[in-house]
Amino acid sequence: MTKSASKPTNTPNTLRKNTKTPPHRGTPADRPRTKSASVLALLMSKDGATITDISAATGWQNHSIRGFLSGTVKKKLGREVSSAVVDGKRRYRLAV
Image (cartoon, rainbow, N blue to C red; front, side, top):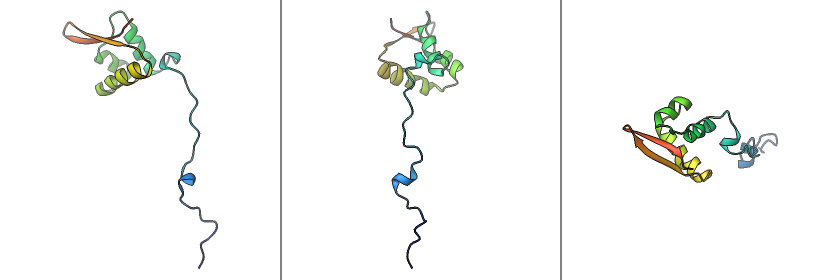
């Protein structure tokens, strides 16, 4: 018996459905209605924001917020995030 010609082979190229990369959408500040943009707005406020403030605005968990601050804000956007303890709570701000 021979193999049927109509049977697809399971090569990596046939398993991929979409090989195109999505278009570049800009930085979070360029998209004002995203969660990232709302976090940046909180960080730019005069008093800054606590982890609790950011969590309430986005629904993110604490470790996700800290990852966003270090990975996206510091590394990808190149912005400096300052933090200080005010009234027993750590507040984060974008350094000017």
